[in-house]
Amino acid sequence: MARAERIGWRVAVVAVLFVVSPLGPTPSALAAFLDPATASATFGTDTLAAPTNVTTSLCATGFTASWTATTSTWRTGYEVQWKLSTSGTWNSATTTGTSYTVSGLSLLNTYNVRVRAYFGANWKSTFAGPVDVFCTL
Image (cartoon, rainbow, N blue to C red; front, side, top):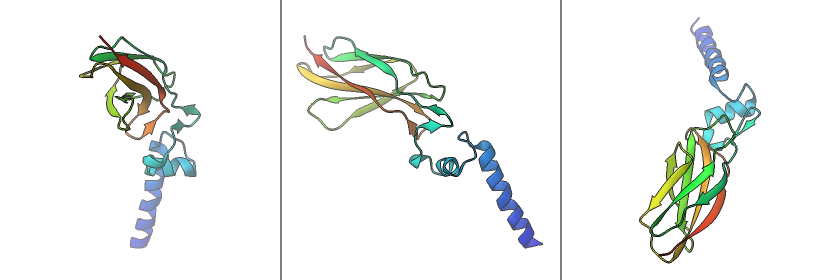
């Protein structure tokens, strides 16, 4: 009797995972649900599309990056990254809007900015950009 209960519990857990998973009941979707870090940015037939048309305002010691929203229905917000063009380290921030203001930059330097959409903690689109912005007087 105890063995039958244990087997029944395991079957119930698998059934719940298939029902809760937004990815559908396929083996790869189940694996993505169990370990989202290894999943791609595809949900069923809807791919998490990158935003488009990234632009920046004029830069003195800061700039505003703007973009066209992604057409994907699977989107929590946007990740904006920027860096000094000669640096390999990206700074990062998130927003739910279609613009973000970066401040505290140095004059006479070129910065790169790029944007991507994200859904939850682990699914991210490809980046739009990078776009260069030169900070001048």
